[in-house]
Image (cartoon, rainbow, N blue to C red; front, side, top):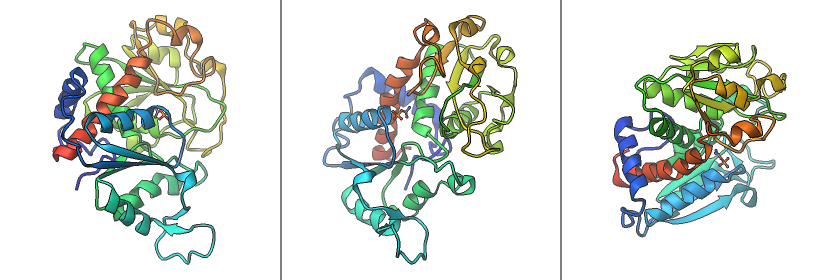
Length: 315
Ligand code: CP
C-alpha cells in the first residue's frame, strides 16, 4: 500500500509532474475513477488552501469527502502500552482501524508541538496513523513535512522558469510567532529529488536540519544569496537551536520589491498564509515578481494528481 508522505513517496517524479500538467488542462477528465469512494480528511490544525484544494481535488475525481476538525473528536493517544487514565480517550490504533472501515483514502494535517524537537521530528501523529492504517494516507502537512505544498512548488517553478538550472533561493523572513520547519524542509527535499540545488539564506542560528540540507548550501548574506536568483521562495521557520523560541524578528530580512528587483527578474513564491509587511512587503506581494496565486492554484492540480495516482495504483 502506498502512502504520500514525503519526496520519496512518488515512484516516478517526472511522470507525476507530467500527470499534473495533463490534469491541469482538463481537471474533470477522470471523474469516474473515484465513484463510490470516500476520502476522509482529519485536521488537527487550521487550514484554508489544503482543506479546499484537497476536497475539490477528490470531488473532481468523483469521490465523496468528509472533513473532520479533530477538535470535535476524542483526544487520541499515540504511545503504545500506555495506561490511558488521563485526558486521551481513544488510541490511534482503534481510530485508524475504524476510519479505514469507512474511508478509501485518509488525509491528515498535524503540526508540531514546537516544544519537544525529538518527538516532533519522529512525526508521531502521521507515522502512528500510517502504522495502523490499512488504507493509503496522504500527508496534508505533518510536524516536519508538507509534501503536497512542495509538489505544487515544483510544478509552479517548472511552469514559470524555463531554464535547465535555475538559481533557486529559499529565504527566511521574520514572523512574530514560532512556526514549523515543515514547508522549508519539504521544499528542500523535493528540490533535491528534482535535481535542484537551493541557496538557503537565513540569520545565523536558524540552520535547518542536516537531513533536509543535503545537496543545498547556506549563504547568510540575503542580498548576496538573492543576486541573480530566478526563484525566491520565502518562508519563516523557528530555530532548531532554541527550539520553538523566536530569537530574531529583524525587519531587515523582510522581502521587498527593491530586493527582488536586484535579482534576475525572480519569481516570488510563498505557500500562504503570509503576514503582509512583516514577512513580505505589499510592494513585493503585489508586484510582477509574484506567482503566489498561481502556486495556490497548483495546490489543486497537484493534490488531484496524487489522489488520482493513488486510486490508479500508480503513485
Ligand atoms: N499553504 C498551506 O498549506 O495553506 P493552509 O495552511 O491554508 O492549508
